[in-house]
Amino acid sequence: MRALVLALMLILPGVAAQAAPSVTWRVTKDHWDENDERGYSAFVTAIGRSGCSSSQSCLRDPANPYRGSDQAFLDIDVDCAKLPYLLRAYYAWKNGLPFSWVSGVAGSRFGGTSNRIAGRAGIVDSGTGVNGPTAIRAMLGAVYSATFRTDMAKDSAIPADFYAPALQPGSIRPGTVIYDTNAHIGVVYEVDAAGRIHYMDAHPDFTITRSVYGPQFGRGPAALGWGLKNWRPLKLVGARWNGHGLVGGRYVLAANAQIADFSLVQYDGTEPNPSGDPAKARFAYDGARLGFYEYARVAMSGGRADFNPIYEVQAAMRSLCNDLEDRRQAVEQAIANGIAARLHPSGLPDNIYSSDDSVWESYATPSRDTRLRAGFLGFRNELARMIQLWLNRDPRIVYDGTDLKGDLLMAYDGMSARCVTTYLSSDKRPVSLTFDDVTRRLFALSFDPYNCVELRWGDDRNDGSGACPDQAGKRRYYAMQERQRHVVDRDSGALAGPRDVDIRGLILAMPARPPFVQRYPGERQSRLP
Image (cartoon, rainbow, N blue to C red; front, side, top):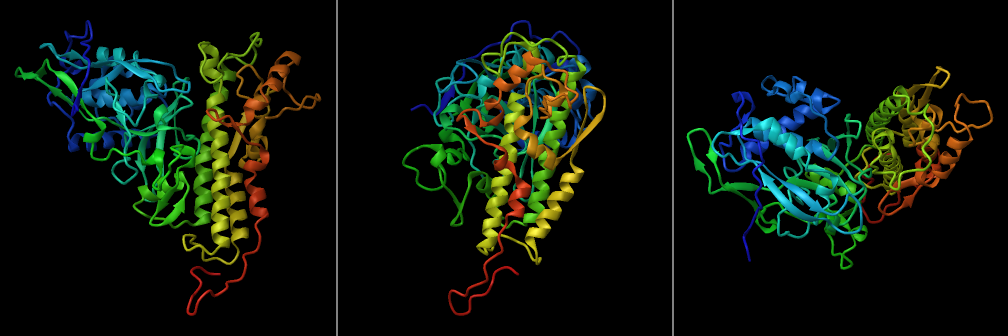
């Protein structure tokens, strides 16, 4: 049994540096040590917290300490799949670290089986240094979302770039990658004290947004590569020092069994699961049964399992409000570029989530909208669970008021009024939607960039009272997309509807809590009232 898997090598043609020292990549260490990983995490955290909105603006931001040495390399755009590779390679270049990547896979971005890794490339200095910008651009041309769709449970003949880490503090960290089998990728930039995993993600229009990890990243099996991933440890072996850096050598990557925090817990659960079906995986922390996303949060906080429902509602709404603002910007780009004014193509793409049509890929929002619906659904489900825990007098619920229903309603209405999405109608009037307005329109929001702005925001009136200029042809496509506007998990095809995201209705329907009944002598209420 091989302890290490030898990586295939590709020395990039024409990459040998003949330029100024500022662009030369000299590999001065044969592996990343703990200090390098901490430095990389700090770099990603700074970029994530900066609020930068594209890869170009992120590289130019003061949060990037290396921006002064980049020259024209600052002008680079990436989508979600390329963002983690850009950040990792860029940091490696600036710090003289080795870097290797999967250069090809046999398979697609979607499908029911994992992709086979077909090749691996790496930064190998022939003696004159490597041109960093050229090497990174070549690397970015080779990686895409299918690169992430590899089996996390097995070592492959050519090793994958990522491994499955344990769900524990320190293992999920800034720089950890999140892969959704719907072909979307995020990069963790912060894990807060409450265990929330904050991530940033890029989009086909090259914008970068931020949110909090949750049900919007639907679950999937290890075989399809779903979930939280860390960069696999690697080492450049057989290289020699020429006075400037390491020359030659080959890359060797650690096997799963050699990685201290390798774990399949996010797929298998913490409890026995003979079926092997990730949908049936069960999670418990200190004996308490939890859902997966709750388990991840509790585990990442080091066991903090108490929840204040008022704060949780406000935090969830802030995160979803950010997602709505990101969507507003995406819709605005389609309108500003005149896509809604064009004739609708004669058909829809074969795959609305991933199309070769440049207009659809750049301006349509089916994946973004599916994640948004999943986020709203997850919010309501989590609130329903917390309400039930409160009704059961579960000690994990921290609330010392006298009217949880009234306080939840006040918190919800207050946040809803502050979370306002405003767009210009087709006749140039400002239209504002509160958070609660969006919950009622959520399954009417059009992801089709050829629709008017009213349909993009769920105003589907067709009685002449609205400003939407879309005629019968476009309306027909809108009607055809009805089912797809209810999908909350592309892989499973799961659907939801307005009742499933009616958060205000859930609060209003809260029953009174049953009176405390002493079950044994001396038992006291864990929470008041």
